[in-house]
Amino acid sequence: MIHRAIRNCLTGYSSRILFLGLALLLIFFTLTATANAAIFRSGDNVRITKGTTINDDLYIAGGTVNIDGVINGDLIVVGSNISLNGAVNGNLLAVGGQIFLNGDIKNSARIGTASAIIGGHIGKDVVIGSGNVNLLGEGRIGRDLILGVGQARVGSSVGRNIRGSAGDLNINAPVGQSVIVSVGKLNINREADIGGGVRYTSDNRAWLSRSARIRGKVTHIPATRRENNSAKQTFSIISFLIGLSWLLIVGSLLMAAVPRLTKEFTVAMDKRLWPSLGLGFLLLFFTPFAIILIFLTIIGIPIALIALFCYLLGLFLAKIYVGYYLGNKILSDLLNRDIPWFWGLLIGEILILSLSLIPFVDFLVRLFVALFGLGALFLALLRVYQDSRQPKTQNEEEASPE
Image (tube, rainbow, N blue to C red; front, side, top):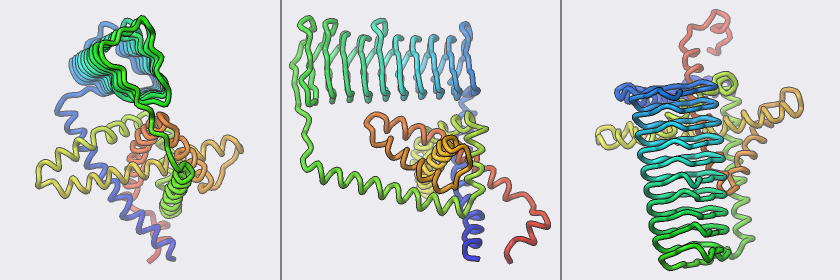
């Protein structure tokens, strides 16, 4: 009786509160996008052919994305493989597994990917988080290059500065001002021509070609060596276990109390993957801006706080459900049979938390979880809410507790 009461309570109220909070945000985004007449494209294969001109902002969520036309506005694209050979007369925001950027970007480019090859001309800044990035010699960056990468080869000229961190950084191109980075290894090759100084934090000394020109001072800052490593490792293990415990406790309660939500989330990931990705993109990147705008109205401060709570809660729940989905898929495929939901949840959360401990990989893991998890969670809540509005059959009414 207690279990049934908790289940009915959570099904009747919690899912509706979450749904309504996310729905308000989505409606806000939709109205904003409609007012700006933005264009949306999605599918397994999305192509903007050569000779095509889009006189507006373009949003794309797809598997393979090829853009050979001209975008007279901002381009926001999410996909597994993205190829841009056309021109964007605005800003670029791209998130994908592999990105090939050979076209021209008038303003700034912000990129999150596992691997990127960039050979185009970017008018302003490039901000990139990637495992591996190669900026080709024919490319050009008008202002700053900001890196958070595993490996980077910089062959494109940089108008102002190079900033950020990298495991391995190779510079073989002109840099207008300075280089300030935290690296594992730094190589400055013969074609490098740096207008200012080089300041790098590393355990290793940089390799400087005799042909490279550096007009300022080269400063090596040894990386601070961690003391008391055993205590830090113990703290990391405890933090890992606490985080895992929270995910398992909350996940177990949700899946036991609202199994329908778990089922609908799995359906969304299996059958509505690209809508989930596109919706997750909207919720992840536009929610903070919407909250700020609402907060600035003063009157809307309570709504903004509620929206912020829903946003943070959505990110937490996304990690739970994506972990369950991945763990269940992995074990089901290995054992070739259905498994109890708890084991899928356990394996999936351990996998996500373990990957999040790897430098440079943690960003991609968090991005993957948020993009797919938020969208699929919203679709699942929508389905649960819609079904709750349907009139019950006579058998269901007789089975319901009084």
